[in-house]
Image 1 (cartoon, rainbow, N blue to C red):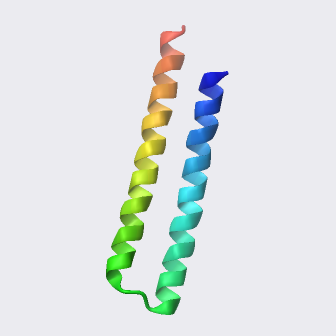
Image 2 (image 1 turned 135 degrees about the vertical axis):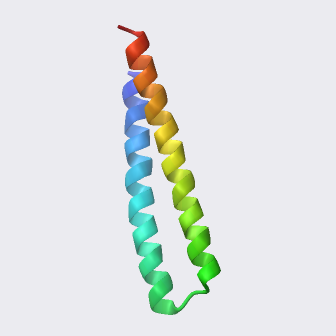
Length: 67
């Protein structure tokens, strides 16, 4: 049950990160935000993806150790 919850969390973080990354990129381009904000958005997206990848890897490892 805990592994399924963690897997759902990783999937949710990935989905929200992708949508926020794209939407904020469009908004920034349309409103002419400074390029520094684009880098900030990109680094925040990388942090979200890294978190989701780490959680996914831990779920995968827990699944392998239970067999």
